[in-house]
Image (cartoon, rainbow, N blue to C red; front, side, top):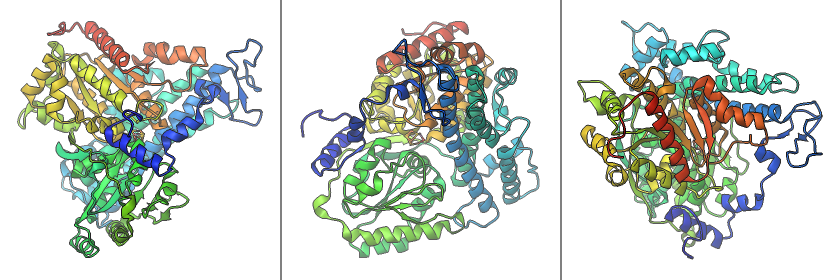
Length: 635
Ligand code: BF8
């Protein structure tokens, strides 16, 4: 294999070569075929919202069109398009939260036998926040009422969301003043679609204000609900070890991949895989056991709670099949490439889709129902085992690369980590920031993207941040990218951390990079920021914190929604590539400057990871200065 012919970690490079040798087209090949990408699309100035068009604004030719047929200018077109992106992303997270609420209610009613309430104390805290009576009641009764309150919040028309009340007073007042406090979850999504219809909301600022309201209904609504209920149902994570990268697949075992997002399915598969009957069957078929591994965010759900290994992130989903050792790929929804059944057809791999919302031609469809969760999971695993003898040994190729990683840091666990079991506090972290040992906290999150150097962007960025005493929190495919580099082990991360960060991490016993879970668990970053404000000494609003969110290789509309809920909550958010906006001058000014006057947060776009780090550091320095904190101790 030619050295550095491909970007990415060594397993990715190796498997891209195998795919090429087998004549299998992958995401990188298709990306090349799309180049150059449509310029109007990249700039955000094409509109196909009605049949007066499709229209485009031509920013290059002075005589070209500057208005759509209806009269919409570049700013209105870009704002409408962007609001639709935010809405689609938020809808995904909100629907994920709805699915969890459904499973949670069925479990509480005793109608979903494989699921139980495992974290009763978290259940009680959440129930009280929702105004559900807890004293003298069984967890099941509390949970049924709680589920109904949450369902009602999806359809709520007036008022404010419950979990957004966790935000500091100053931040909530800002949202109320701006009129962007979300009133209900579904309501904001519907209103966004109505506003972006031709001839409804024709003011880019107004469209963006609603964009922030939709995004807030995701971060402090659907995503936070998903996180809380997943913890209650499947246990609250605590740090644990596991392994990551394609090398977790096994030559002599039945390999089953779970891919997608909602853990209602993946957790059940992980549970059923240890059923003695199934292990016996696997042995009868000549395998030494069953390996379940994950792709994308559902991988991280079962990683942080069960230590299930991660086979790969978004860009590795096709390559996992190219190993030729996957007996079954079980998918639900989100970030699942439509190309997978076609790639699987080169091998013995069965692709099974399970969600009534997400169908994949070329796959087998087995609808997943919580009521028969364990049975369905067992049946699927049995079919996978029976497929094991069909493996074509000539097409088998597993790359060696795997790394250890530690994951499972939650807002609640950070309390324990910092303060010990008796003293529940974020104060040591705040003191570390105030005294100049830690510069600030960066969330390095989001996807991996073939337009970028597939993972290397994350690694270069994070090493630079650690060197400059920035504590890093991670979620999603960005976390997997760093895991594959070995950065999610305390030893490796310490190697790159500056002296101040090292001192704090050693004193409190935490690694300098905290893996907090899948993308819906970005809500944990919000609640951790609330705890930091609550611990005192670093301002009274979220906008005052030296905190930056970065998605170096974002690709999904969900990343846009996440970025916007952080900007609306007062953070600087950096994307490696801009979302489509640069063709609209006033909109560009709004998202990168003007919005800061409203929420304290804003956007920056920068492709170079070292420059991303520089923007982060400068932003943290300016926040530190505004808070009148001590200069950095060692720099
Ligand atoms: O929600 S990081 S590629 S897997 S969108 Fe998708 Fe991006 Fe991965 Fe999860 Ni998040």
